[in-house]
Length: 255
Image (cartoon, rainbow, N blue to C red; front, side, top):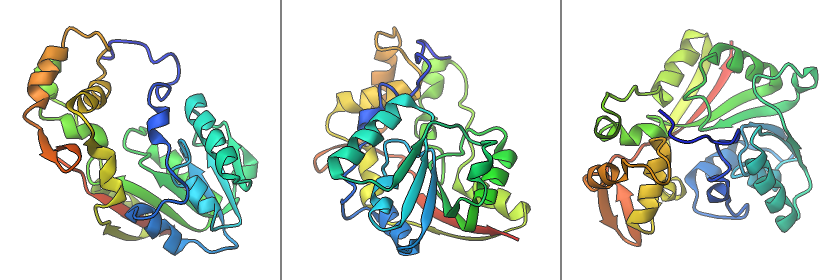
């Protein structure tokens, strides 16, 4: 259904939006991760993006290995690294699962942040993740995949129902079925909520357009504008979606 090519890097047009201050406060997800971290830890961040968590973690642990296949995301992470003088992040151009033997048993904690919703071969993905972690694995996930925020208007745009991807509760069920010992809980809506508050309606339109795989000049944009109007509410400082996902922190050890 994609109307335009992503040029081989889906995140190229979006990468700058994933930049975040490594020394920020008030982010409930980051606070939860830092509560797990110890100064002598090595963390593995699989799908590190622009370093939203890899860089602040690096300020509190011994070393972070950041796996990121998107050139645009790696460029943003590397730029922030230099800007903030963070030198203990090992940034690697790799995909996961990786067959690199040096990644086995490489970290105390292996992390995925909003990765996994659309991984078809999730078993191999988790097997490799668990082999990499000496102490535990951690995931940040929403109770439903971010793209599912637009499931109500998908039929108006694409003339068929939206196939909803699995979310955090499905992920927990999967882990338990695989024999893992799981600890999970919801996070407060503070820093994580800001991602889904938009300064203008046009910003919300652009986010929705990308989530619905429409081109910038799509003939369906008027349909999108009409449909999106029913999902947006005005909040202090901008516009928000009615269907806000709940973020969860999931920790597990394999039995």
